[in-house]
Image (cartoon, rainbow, N blue to C red; front, side):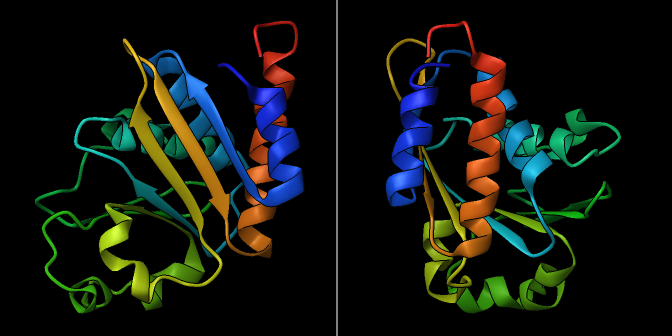
Length: 178
């Protein structure tokens, strides 16, 4: 993973950071660090084009939350919401097919959110109803197999979670190309 130390420094200054993963495994590892740092009521809002790795990142989050088999995490596009038990319950939403933010709320988001960790794919479609304290993660293609991942915290909880995750990754990455 590239630029981890710089990303952590930037995050501590501004609450935002950008880093680059070079493989699917690195994207999963970032997700795992986020999941390990997640607290009850953490909202992780994912943005990015089709196929960029939102579900892969979510598999890592599931691993970090101790979901028994994180490999079962799949894109919930046709189901809209999937729940996975772990250290905290993982609620995995996919808003791609939703027409309005109200449809998202009809899935029970407000009732489920305080109980666990909510990961929302295509979160930009429901931005207006998400809590003011959310961790926004934007994934973009960056060269052959790489991903540029921008992380932005909008409140105290999301800032704690992101900083702990970046610290965990920086510790794992020491001695490698940061």
